[in-house]
Length: 285
Image (cartoon, rainbow, N blue to C red; front, side, top):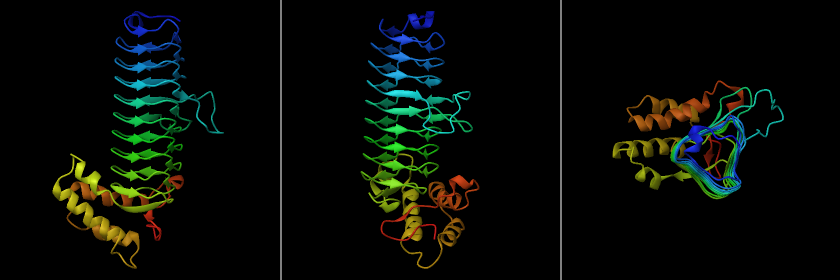
């Protein structure tokens, strides 16, 4: 192990293995038998616990907590992966990664795999190559985000939830245990344990969200009813256009525009439709 001046000010256990190209900020804590591979950056206040592995090309911000046997920055699980383009994993601040979490670097072409701030990844959860994760999300035990999946902020994925590749999940959703999505998931909904099943509006999440006003909550509920409960024989696209013509609060407009963007997705791989009601028709119909 080669120790730089900055690393000398960090708390590094003598049994840790740190590649000389990696940078450890003062105040970081590196425990016994940790492995940190090449071209990694570890921010101040981050704690890497015993036997965790940071493989390579990984940037980790401040005050993260990485538990034993987590493997961050591993090669992408992609048959098209070319080692000449090793890809990156970028992690923000104040995240918790529990035992056996795996986060993979990006595959080429595509953006780096990116994890925001204040997320909680529970045991054996996974984010695949090029995944994009926002802030304040809870990813339950053994839940998986496939390659190129995107989730917004303040989502709760219970245990054994699966998000298909290229699927986008909005803000403030709640997934029941065992749920799965192969289509885009609108903001503020509860997903059932069926595949692509919207069980209802996440009223508790709306109430607890400090960024929403009472007017926002009222308009979001009204838009949800128009899209999932009262649109009758109208197509989803027709209902969305009607709502976009109304005077809605900014948060409600964001909710409606999620549907519009999903139904008008220009990239073929991301044309996945929108999740429908549990036991009902596809919301894209």
